[in-house]
Length: 148
Image (tube, rainbow, N blue to C red; front, side, top):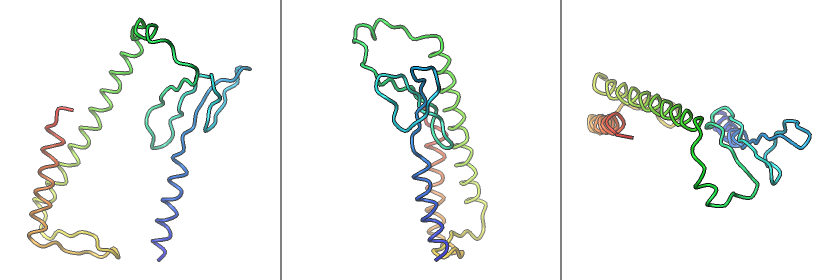
């Protein structure tokens, strides 16, 4: 019962902790933070623990399409794209390594089990182990050999 209450409390807390926070500069030049930026200011999403990189948000009126088409990507955009590509490659490598380790454990393991509803060990049958091995092999093939 305690575990259920703790899990429920953690889930409720995590939803509160995942709120979006914006950062902007006000008319006096002071840095401001809030969950909703005022209209007509350039605001950034603040990177919080467990969130993605900040994304700029401009709440002012959008520029005409002709002005947007004439704008060329700045050199910083190229650097950002390169950094993003490196981050994606690192995450993909980690996912591939994790999938390979899982597959290796399923192949080399003798008495494999999964946690039961009360945390006890429930040893898997041969059919369940074979199914898990097939799923793990598919994961390795999909994650490690995908182009994206």
